[in-house]
Structure formats: C-alpha cells, structure tokens
Amino acid sequence: MSMMNQESKEYKLSELTLPQDLKKLNFYQCRKLAKEIRAFMVRVISKNGGHLASNLGTVELTMALHRIFESPKDKIIWDVGHQCYTHKILTGRADKFETIRKENGISGFPKPDESEHDVFISGHSSTSISVACGIAEAMRLQSDNHKVIAIIGDGALTGGLAFEGLNNGGKKKLKNLIVVLNDNNMSISGNVGAVSGYLRSIRESERYVQKKQQLEKNLLSNAKIGMPAVKVLKKTKDSFKRVIFQQATMFEQLGFVYLGPVDGHNLQELEEVFKTAKRYDAPVFIHVKTVKGKGYLPAEQNPSQFHGVSKFDIITGNPEVSGNDCYSDVFGKELTALAEQDTKICAITAAMTYGTGLQYFQEKFPERFYDVGIAEQHAVTFSAGLASAGMTPVFAVYSTFLQRAYDQLLHDVAIGKLHVVLAIDRAGIVGEDGETHQGTFDVPMLTSIPESVIYSPACYEELKLCLRRAIQKDTGLTAVRYPKGNDANMNFPKENINTDYYFTKCDASILLISYGRVFQAVWNAHCTCEKSGYKTSILKLTRIFPIQEELIEKALNYKTVMFFEESSGYGGISTIFGSLLAQYGFQGQYVRISADSFLKHASVSALLEKSQLSAQAVCRYIYTYGSKN
Image (cartoon, rainbow, N blue to C red; front, side, top):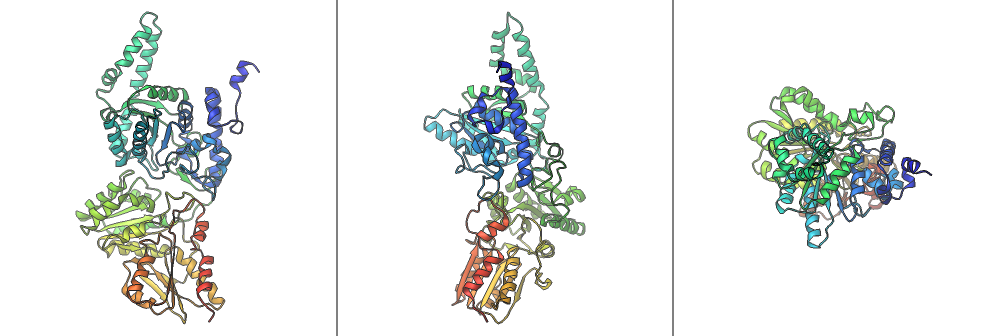
C-alpha cells in the first residue's frame, strides 16, 4: 500500500486497540473515526436512552485528550460525568457500549470499578476541580509528575464548588493541574447569570487568538525576524493579551495560565493547546468552545430536549412514546394555575426548567420565575430570602440534587420557620442513571430537620391536592415528593385519594403500610392475596411526616405490621414508625422493607423487585407472615 493510501485509510472502531492505537492515527483518520463514534452513540442511545447532546459535543475534545495525554497515568476527571461516553468508547469499552445504562452493563457515568481510566465516580456537577486539586496534590506528594485534567462545562461553572476549587488550585499553584472548560453556552437548559455573560464576552473576544495567530504567521514568514520575534511574543503574551482585552481574565487573576478560546471540534487546535498546557509549570485553564449536539441535527437544534433522552426515532428525533403527561408536567401546570390566583407564588429552578416542568410557569409568569443556574445551595437560600420578605417560593428540584443543599434547608429555612415549598421530582428509584441519581435519600434528610412536613402523593390528583395544601395551608419547610414517570398504572379506588392517610380495616392479622408509587404495588398484592384467602388491612400515607399519633394506635391492633418504603429506611418513615410502635409497647412483628443500598443502574421495575418493593415481592411477604382466613 502506498504512503498516500496508508494515510487515507479509514480505521473502524472494531479494528483498533484503544486507547493505544488512537495516537497512531492522522487527523484525517481521526475525523472519520469521530464521525463513526457519533453515529455509534446516536444508534445506541436511541435504543437505551441516556445523555446524547452533551456527548456529541465532546467527541473531538475527548479524542484530543487521549492523543496528547497518557491515561491512566495522566488523570482525566469528568465533571458530572454525563459527557464521558466517547471516553468510555476510547478506553476499551466500545464492545460493551451497547449495554450502557442496562442492568449488568456499563454505567452512563464514570465508575472506577469499571475501568482504570475512570478516575473518580461522579454524577453531580461542579466537583471536578476540587477532586483534581486533591489528586494533583497527592501526586505531588508522591513525586508523580503526570498531569491531572478536569473537564468542566460552563453550566457546571455556575456552581459555587467550582470556584472554591479554582481558588484553591490557583492559590496553591498546583503545577500539574489543568482545567478544561467545555463551553457550549448550555447546561441542561440555556445558561443564565453573570458567569455565562462573562464567558460570552471572552468568546466574543476571539480576535485575541486570531490576531495572535496571524501575527505569529506573519513574523514566521519574515526570514530575518521570524522565530526570535515569535519567542519574544510568547514571553510577552500577557502584555499582548491585556492590550486586546484591556484586562486579565478572571482565571488569570485566580492564578491560572489562561489559554483560549479554542475550537473544540478542531483536532489540530485542541492538540496544539494541550501540548502547550503540558509544558507549563503552573496551573492552566483552557477555554474550549463546543456545540452541544454536534453532528446530529435534531440534537443541535434542540440541545435541551436531547440532553437526557429516552428511546427515540433516529430519523425524526421523536421519542418513541409521546403525548403522555408525567408528574413533572402535572406539577408545572398545577403550580401555574395556583400562581394565577396568588401573586406571591414564585418558582425557582437550578438549571432544570424543562426537567422539572417549570416551562409552563416561566412562559406565563416570567417575572416570578428564577433559574439560578446549577446552584442548589443558592436556590434554597434565595428561596429563604424570598420567603422572609413575604413571598411564597416553590423550589423544584430533583431528589438527588437536593442533597447538596442540606445545610441551607436546616440553617437558612427551618431555623427561621420560613415557608419554603420543595417540589421534589424524581423521588425514589429512578433507574438507569444509577447510584448517583437515585432519589432515595431525601426522606431521611428531611425527617432529620425539626418541624418539616413531607407529602408523598400516589397519583396525579394527590399531587395537585398536596401542592395546593403545601402552598396555601402549611407553614415552614414543606416538601411534596413524586417519582419520575407517570401514574398510568395507578388503579386503586378513588376513596384512597387524600392529603393525609387512608386506612382500610378488615378482619386481618397483618397491616400493610406504604406511600407514594409503591402503594400501588401494595394495593395489587392486597387484592391478589385476598383472592387466595390471605386478608390484610392497608394504611396508605400521603402526608408521611410528621407521623400522626392516631396511626400508631391503629397499628397496635395487629400481630404483624409490614412497612414498604421506596426510600432509604435508615432515618426513613418506616424506621421512625417502627421506633414509635416500640415506644407504644407494640408486641407483634414489625417488618421493614426499604431501598437501603446504593442502587446500580437498571430499569425501575428491576430495581423495585430487587428492593422487594414490587407487587410480587409484597405477596411473598404476605404469604410468609400471614395465614389463610
């Protein structure tokens, strides 16, 4: 084969030993490989669901990182981790990629126990720089001179932890630290705030890079002054930059060498800037511009819609199932309806407008809608400020992300008895996103806060009733929590629907207690077992905390009480209920079934069964502890 043919040969993913072979490819071959990777990701994610737009935007960036740096000796740390799909493909997992987010398959996020190339488990934003600082310092102490590279998005840069990491990294002058800003002007929804505006001003000042490159080119073309002048220019780049910008960038003021902005889809530019960064004996900040959804038109046109997707049709980009409401939509529409009657109601989100259903509120009441960026701590304290001045703030947030604001809930809201309503979306088991995203810890977190009130509706109608009550009647910290998905399978009697509790008593020795989505499984098991001669009474909680004394008294009349809870039981309602039963002198059997472990990625139905919270599992408990009447 001629040299020209060899250079133009296209290598398929299946023909390469990765990541080693990646460095042997030329730019033409890399571009062809990038195209194949994008097509591969679109095909797999269209079947499995997952994070698409963010991964399509980082293909070349990931390739350049693995071509210039030496993973796993050089440590690559992905912020959030939802953009690590290309990284997984390039580090020996291409043959497993079709299992991504499936039970027993590879995770959609970095997992150190999955590969030595996954340095740190992540699923929440703004953590990478702090992690990188710690690893960089540990490597210094161990005389390891390899680099630590943190890749963080411009959305994640709105989180306060990111600036704490930047401040520490710049202050300590960590010589082996490189921060790569993946700037696509997006997080999940469009970015907001001063940080986004600041980055935009830098992006719009590309004339610095362009002028610098043009000047170097002109100088090099002059045989007399060429290279010596370029060397002088490089030494005086800070002065040159300040002439263009009029001031140093914020990142330079924090102690970093700033490089960029760079085209994140141009491999040559990326590799040049990474090589330059490696040569610096100082912390480096590289500003890379990318397009979210790059290479797949539906994702480029609607990056928010394609941030996290379920199964979809590749040709049209349309989801396989559409037109059905979900809990998020029902919440968003009901809150908007309530806000029409009450001008004090405000809606707050942390960069999750569409994910939480607040787009309806935003459209109708933009002056009372606040997207604070990926900053859950600020969102809670901002809500506390609104409440202290007479407004009624409703903060809509995924359960997993609310974990980040515990101190603010306790210190800034609860102690002052301020009326802040939490709309906790994705409560309970969420499925394929795995351990970092399961919503099984909000209940134990909130029950530890004195005087908090928690509702867990089991259907859309209860969600509406609970939201109305939380806003109009309750005081202090109040939460309404609801699961991902819809209530299509809810078929219990209408008389069950309420904002407190429902108790159905029969001549039975077993009492089944539950709340939220799992109540449907308990109801189904109750009906199934009754046909087989096993009778049970049912207690369905809607206002799950604080627990009412009369409910404990009802439970004392049974030989066996079984509590099924789609939450961590440690500090959860089932544990508190059991403790109260013991205090009241209960002499029977108390069985607590809850989701107590870190649940790995799998379907919701599979994880409910694994946690013994399916209808079949409830039946097994009834058959084990009960007897035919």
